[in-house]
Length: 467
Image 1 (cartoon, helix red, strand yellow):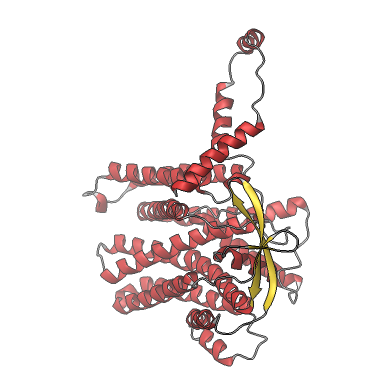
Image 2 (cartoon, helix red, strand yellow):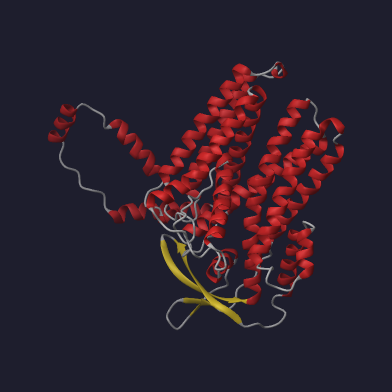
């Protein structure tokens, strides 16, 4: 647990000029605390969506009980799960904190946690406190890694706990609450053929929450896979990820909603099949490896409790991949539950299947659409949705090729994968022609690794200086 907190701390801090320690490793005696912006943003999105959904329920009349029931469900279920997650992460059940537990029962846990984080931040530095431990990370600069050390104090540790908790709750809120809420409200707007201002506000807040949750997924995936390195994405990387995630999620939700308005009897089987396949994929891989359940989920859990927690994790994983790429692969046999290798094959298969699925669904909607869309240019809408998802894939490729903070550690990047695909298609020549070319051409010397590294460093340095 302490190691995870140290990783979160180092990723959020901007160290001062380091000093040399006794073993030659640059040492940072104290670390500058950064404001808990992620905690504030997560709490603000939680409160905004909850309040807006409650106000929307007050606008329903007696004929809209179905919409009101689903709106309340998608408002309360993620709120309850967030209270349980915060209580579990902070381990409050074994502590004497009746006020905090009471506020969690009132679904106000994120508010009191946000206030606690702000109190810790503003009290930090007013009195000297001993450090808890020393964290070590490797900083990548110009293709070379240099180790750094930091002292971790009590305030830094508490803030790291809050950041760690709110990152998890942001993902729960995004994909178990905001995603179904956005889908429901967009479907209700089309079915009722009437636009409510409060409903539009709820859909905007839900889209922001989903995009932020997907962004947190990407950052957490990088931090978990490269836990030995100091990860600090640049603003250009954040902007590229926002465009990638926003276009991907908006297109996916729109396609599903449009398809459901035309073929209502088919949307439920499609959603259920997607969730079941994504849910059982990690378990099939776990059973194929004949591995045992990890024992570090919680020391007080039995095997049944551990299985329940792992089922909840895989269900959240399935919900994330239902709408966007989760950026990680679940490995139930690993102690961290995450596959730390860069799986380019899974990434390519996922986006290929999703692109084909979205295209097929929107084409089926075009042929079976209702009369409600007679005043809309349907071919243009189909083309726009296909282009938007293609742009999402384009920004994803740009991120992994040029803006990923640990791209220098990749064994193969996006350009290498594209070259392999092109070479496979180009090498399908007749064997006689290929043999004659091999006999006539002189053997080529393999490229020098130093040259490749130097060219990569020059390119990366130019990109880093420009950013």
